[in-house]
Image 1 (cartoon, one colour):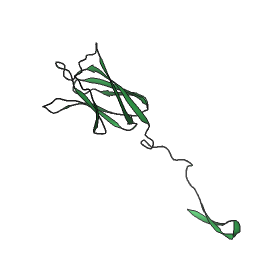
Image 2 (cartoon, helix red, strand yellow):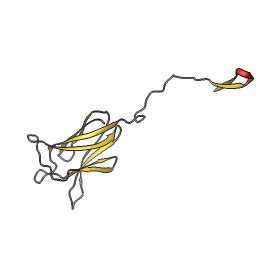
Image 3 (cartoon, one colour):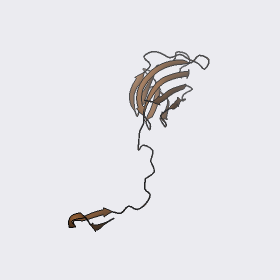
Length: 134
C-alpha cells in the first residue's frame, strides 16, 4: 500500500508503506553455496568378489567415474580424488556400473552444508564423499 505526499517543487511522490517484519526468513535454496566434492572413500564394495566401477551424478547428470575397479573393505578402504563442483541443495547419487546388467544405485544424499560428508550405503555397499567450500 502507498500514499501520496507533497514533494519538493510541488510534485507528488508516492511513498510505500511497509508492513510486516523488516526482513523475511531465508528459505532453503535461497542461496546455494558452491562446494567442492573432493574425496570418495570406498569402505565396503557392493560387489565383494570383483569390486565396483562407480560413477557420480549430481541432480541426475553424470559428472565423474572411477575409471577403474575399486576394491575395498572396512579394514582396507580405497580413496579416490573426485574434484567436482556442486552446490548446497544438490542431490548427489552414486552408482555401480554393472554392464551388461542394470546399474546398482548405491545411494543418494543431499549437500546440506558447505562442508561435510555424504554417505552412500545401499545394496550392501558403503561409500563416503567429503566436500567443503569451493
